Structure formats: structure tokens, C-alpha cells
Length: 428
Image 1 (cartoon, rainbow, N blue to C red):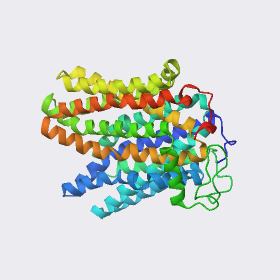
Image 2: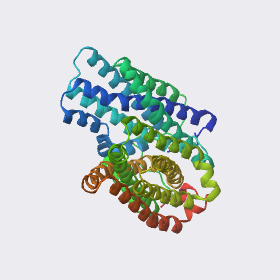
Image 3: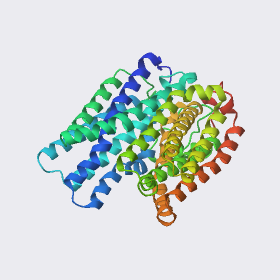
């Protein structure tokens, strides 16, 4: 892809940020309303859980193809199409609900298609961002983007979605559809890189490229293989990807048993559970706001390894106490450290990966990072069932601290981490 069409952050980046904010608020409302809607229209507990799971299954099925398409087509256009797909699905869901025809299979299909749209949008958006933001501002830009998404989805959206559902079952879905349309309109004004010869062109030449089986008329599977091989043969990208998988498995595993900890160990009411979750979200917002400045002040290696260690220590703190203020602070620290890790790690990947591979590398990264989350929930649930939720948090803390060693080794051995003057041409 050509990068000479990159636009100034004051135009393209702010439109991408606005689109992300709009869709994040809508997503938060949907995250809150969809389980409530499923419970209201379905009688079977398994069907309700299946609808919830259907929104995450597309990450396992389509993360790699979505990444490949993000490298073959105009990324802005893919994001717009993903927004329009999700808006259309929500409108159809509302119509079926109004006609009293929203049964299990239509609801399951809607949830799945909404997940497909999310996969396409995410892979394309993280690949698009480096073309609308200068390299030296990537960490700050990613920090703001993550912070906006956290506020919109985890704080504002979910609260508003739950309230609006009490007004009318269709209300949060309608507003979610409007949010996707607003996102698509904002993205229309973004100019980003496009394939120089369209989707049928072969891989670009250059130090970071290998001819491979996709040359000439690349097939989708050949593109995917090239993306997977690119990530696996780079020790740093491999370490970042595996670490993300471990971190997310631990984080979702702790989320899965946190409600048990709050209700059975701390003996708090359900309202306190929501307040403690909000503490984590607030920590994440603060982390997103300061991640760029923190990385520049202390360096990428201390920012990544230090916050990874902070996550592990916070997990051990939760396991070791029954004092609510300590749990709240530890959960806020976890949100902060996780956000800083994400911002710095994603910015580093965007810096060292050549533009033509960004979509596929993002797909591989997201497949591992999100694909391990259900496994983490199952493992930590089993540990909690046999030894209690504190043991699950202790396990998570130890695993996270042990992850510091290999990621620190990979970071310190790679000159691209410490030398910010390196360009994407240095990628293997």
C-alpha cells in the first residue's frame, strides 16, 4: 500500500477518533442490552449464553481473513462497510422484535453478524491509524483512541444501554444503529492508503517483503499464510503476540470469577460489583491518557515490562485481602496497567510492521489475543470452583509475573524497541 496519502492528525485522526467514539458508545449499549433482550425473548439458559458467545466467535473464525482483506482493500472503505453491515443487522433485529418474530436463530444470527462487523472494523482501523498519525505521535494517538473506546463502551454505553432497555427493548438497538451510521459518515472524510493496483496486485517489493506464493494474483489463503509466517518468524512480534494471549486469558479469567469474589468472599451486594468493575474502567481511561507520555519518559521496555509486573502484583493483592478499598484500588491498577501495555504494545507493532502487512499482522495478533480469552475463563472458573476465587487471582498474578521474563528478553534484544529512528523497512 502506498503511504504518501497520509493525512494530518487534525483531519483524518480526529475523524477516526470520532467514529471510534460513536461506535464504542453504541457497542456499550449493545453489550448491556443484548443479554437483557436474550433473557426477555428466550426461555432457555443455554440459548441465552449461546447468543452472548456468538458475538465473540467471529474473532476465532475471521480474524485472519479480515486482516488479509485489510491489506488488499482500502481500509477506510472496509470500516464503512462494517459500520453499514452492523447498522443493517440492528435495524432488521428491531423489525423482527416489533413483529414478535425475534426467536433464537434470528437473534443468534444477528449477534454473529455484529461480531463479524466488529472484527472487520477493528482489523482495518488499527491498520489505518499509522497512515493518519505521524510515527512520533502513535502512542499518544493510540492512548486517546483506547481511552475513548473504554469510556464509550465500558462506562457510558453500558450504563445508558441498561437504562434505555427499561424504556423500551428496541431503544438501545436503534441508537446503536444510529451510532454506526454516524461512524460511517465520519469515516467518509478520511483519506488513507489504498492498494496501488487494487486487491489483485502482488506484494510490494522491499526489504520487509518476500515474494511468496501470493505473488501476481494472491489468493486469500496465500495472503493469510504470509501474514502468519511474518509474525512467527519475527522474535519480537512473536513474543508480543504470545504475551497478549496470556495477558488476555488471565484478565478474562479473573473477570469470570470476580463476581464470585465480590458476592461470596467480600459479601457485597450486586451494585458493588458494578462499582468495582467501573474502578477498572476508570483506571483504563487514566492509563490511556498517560500511556504516550509515560512511554516517552521511561522508555518502551520499562513501560511494557513494568506495567506487566504491575498487573501481576495487583492480582496477588486481590488474592491476599478481603478489604474492599484494597480490591478497588488493585482493580483500578489492573485497568491502568493493562491499558498502558496495550497502547505501547500496539504502537510498537504499528511502528515496526510495514504498511502492507499491518492488516494481516493485526489479524494474527487479535486471533491469539482474543482466542485465548474463553480458555482463560474456563481454566480460572475451574480453579475457582475447586480452590476459590482467591486462588484464581493468585494464579493469574503468578502467571502474569512469569510472563515478564520472556517479553523483557525479547524487548531488550531488539534494537527497534529502543531506537525510535528505525523505520518499518527494518522489519524482517
